[in-house]
Each structure stands twice: as structure tokens, then as C-alpha cells.
Length: 343
Ligand code: ASP
Image 1 (cartoon, rainbow, N blue to C red):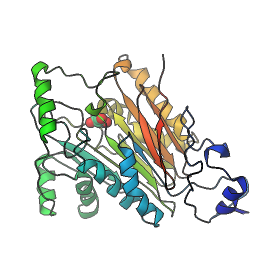
Image 2 (cartoon, rainbow, N blue to C red):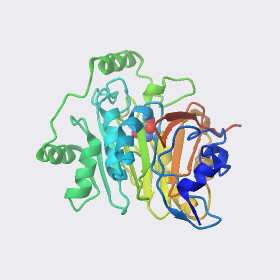
Image 3 (cartoon, protein in one colour):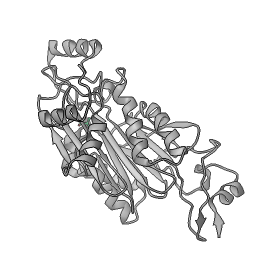
Image 4 (spheres, rainbow, N blue to C red):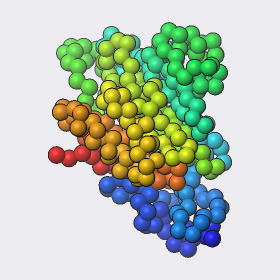
């Protein structure tokens, strides 16, 4: 028997050099190398790799700040659920991130409407859809999970619930977002995504964490597609679409054009593929292929998937270039360029 700590000291290298594909994008990153991974002692049967934990991963560049907020909780032995809620709240509050929470771009009528969901290690889930005036939809989603017998509240009912729970109301439309919307109204050309378009148009934050106790959780929060139809709800509050967590297997999350993710139940599919033995990267690739198979216009769309299994292995894949994720398994965070569909 080898302990996890002994194993890593014996190799003297980071995760990528273990040759286990633990960060399994096609462009193999070197996360963990020399980053002083936070380790916990655990007895590992011969022939099995020790789990990488704690670890936290998030979609997009702004995932770095979200990971920085989540990491101290994980490092201190805290719960993955607390880490992901704390992590994505940073993005929700950041007016520079014009695709999530406060400062998010509005719908085509000028209303900022938010979608979010959260899932814990027991399979419990909470979500809010089409929520207005509340800065932290992820915390409302958690309250739905913990304080109601339901999974999802939407619209005015979600808002009333949030207010009753003590969440303050805020005007979420910042001057910068209003200006961008007013510029857009000159043409009112609705195009959810095209290569090279402003990435701020839709960059949901989804975050997955595996804590020191081996428990997984995930959170997803967004203002959705910029200038969407009023009332449109995307994948981000839908359990199984933008987020799925199964503590026995792993967790997966999504970003991109939510309609494609909903129609292929992407995150649930990825977790089920991992249950069948597929690696996180391979499972994400297969979920992307389902979209390609069904939608002849896939080249005009972006969808990115990110997955973390219960062993701390990370993988991602995207339809189109430019998708990135942030990974933190020690004091440093790495931003990884994700492999994408070609052809
Ligand atoms: N998935 C989000 C939605 O469809 C958008 C995004 O990820 O940018 O609402």
C-alpha cells in the first residue's frame, strides 16, 4: 500500500507527468506541476491512482477569480458545495463580467434576467430561472434546494422567494451594459455566437469542486445569451443540461448556446459516459459530437463542456475555439485552452 503523499513525493513531479491523463484535454496541460498540490493522506490500493483533491475547475478566464475564492474553503477542508457557491458569487458580483449576474447584458427589451443552479454531493439540487433584480442567483438557488421542497423557482415567484429570504433587490443593469444594449439596438441583429464575436456575449460561469473528503458539488450562473428574447431561459438553471453531479462518478458543466445543451442533455450525458468508464475529456468530446450529429449549423455555435471525475481527473472539449477553463489544485491557478471540434 502506498499513501498518496508518499506516492507524489516518490515521483517528485506534478500530476501531468504522472501520465494518467488527469487533466485530459487534447492539448495536455501541466496543471499541478510544481504548484505544491495540497495533499491529503489516504491509503491507495496497489494499481490504483490516488485521487487529486481538493480541486476546483471553472469555465472561462473569469473562472480564475472564482477559483481563488473557492480554494481557501477547499484547502481548509470545507465542503465542495460551500466552495462553489462562494466561488461563483465573485463572478456574479463583478460588473466587468458582462455575461453573469450584476453587469450582465440584458435581454432585447433591456431586462437583465438571470438563470442559475447548484447541486451537492447527495444529489440535491436547486435552481432559479428568469430571476430579476437579485445579485446572487446562485445563493437563491441554494436556498430553493435547502429551504423548499422544490428544485426550481422561476420569474416573479423566484424573486418573491428571494426577497422573503432576505436577499436585497438591486438594479442589475450597469451603465456599461446599458450602453452596449443601446448600441446593439441600432441594428438589433440577433446572433448568439459566431467565431471571433465578442466573447462577453455569452460566458456563463460553471464551477465544479471535489473537496478533501471526496465530495463533489457544482454551480452554474449566467445572465444568458445577450439580447435574448424576453422570457428566454437557457440551459444554465436546468439540472442535467448545464450541470450534473453524481458523487459516485463525477460532475460536468456547460457553457455556450444553451438550446444545444438542453436538447442533448449534455452534462447528464457526460456523467453517464464517465460512469461507463470514459475519461472526462472523452466524455466531453462525445457530448460535443452529439450536437454536431444533430445540428448541421454547429459551426455557427459555441458549446464548451468541462468535467471532473471523483478521482480529480479533469477534461474539457468545445465545439469551437476560444473556450478556456481555470483549474486550481494548489496555490496556483492555471488557465487551460480547450481542444475543439475541427472539420
Ligand atoms: N449557456 C448560456 C445560455 O444559453 C450562455 C452562455 O454560456 O454563455 O444561457
